[in-house]
Image 1 (cartoon, helix red, strand yellow):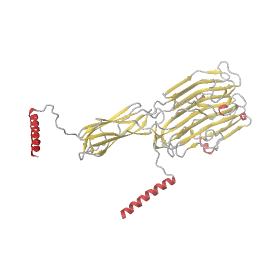
Image 2: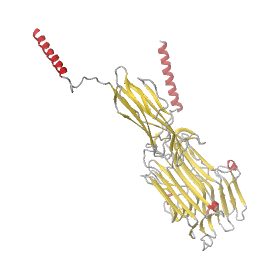
Image 3: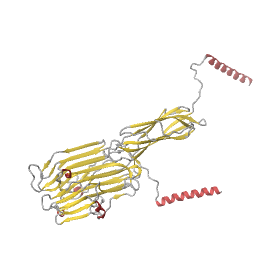
Image 4: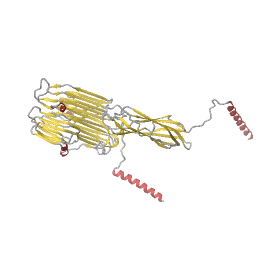
Length: 579
């Protein structure tokens, strides 16, 4: 009675815990979704300098009198097929293409007059754009000076784009899903004075990104999307599955407005500025990070100078935390209003009142930011963005499962008792990284009367279960060496099939592999990745000890068999007569 009472109490306690868990919302950890089934998407886009004059209409009906972009990049991925994406300035970043999964674009310089959101610009210099599948890479270079007065001048331009996606079954790891790069040097836009007939350089450009020293005159923007191991905001792994990151990195040359006029304003931007949105699919794995790269605390990140080189305002690295979220505003009455050092904000939210999207369950993150935003002549002339960046990432609950491809085969596929057979574990590396420190754990279990003995391993394993008639055990290789990009490696175990109680059964074999990514083409170095083979079932049947078939039987044996048969017939006849 006491035992029954304790059993009832245990059942009641388990039920109470289950009800409480449902009531307060406790759930089992979510399982990551295999790459070929995962619904995920994201994009990143950047503009070094974007200027748009007065526009008419809104949304799809908007028409800009003029727009100019130096360094325009975009990168996108959508597992369900690409859809059209426009940036905050209502310019098309990604064209819709349902049959494609990834897209990259990069241009050095673009200019348009009376253009709608989806209209190609009149001047698109060194634009590269590709989509996948299949994977593609494109570069467009202009290494000599370009003078197209009164629209634009540049000493060098470059656009580069890459899109990777060949198979729905294989994760793109260790390299970008998509990227775009825009590079420009000595760019001048919209001549308001007199062009030098010899050099082609402008006398009074509306916007110029050049400087006395060549290295300061170079500007570059790079946008990319990539899969990365689940991690927290500090970059420490918190899971073995994968999430999506979208990132923009920009190095901005000094920007001068109204060059050569009394209203000249120069904006110097130091270091590389980075905006990243990451979603890993588990709590704590969604985050937005923004700020300068490797810059000393006392190095000016931003300086604003007037025509006489007087300092109007500056921003150092240690100043950033004291700025309001909407940034620091600097005004030159009747000329320009600058907003510098704003925090990331929600995409489309220009006044900074809404925080970036960061989902508590880790499934999404998105943000936009301008390093500097300029309103020229109270908006009558232009809305100018310097260092504009947007990033967005979305993944399923649990993240994306990017397992190492592991397969097992047995030879022969089925055996009899006391017969040897060999299982081969094959590990493939389709990724953009080497697989290093590859560990293999081969777990063997049995069903029914089947048992086994390990005969040998190749190469020699570090751990091998000893003895015979084993019900289970593990064969372990601590490190089988590296597997290079596109390579494969195999290990094998030879078993002897055994049994107990004169019963057959099954020997079941599952291999687990772990490795560290190294020598990656892109992001991913140091990340750990795992993979598991499908279970391999090897039937074990009892050996039937049948008599010989008669082939090669001696005459004596045949005569003996006939004699026995004759005696049996005689005995049957006698029995019948007696009845």
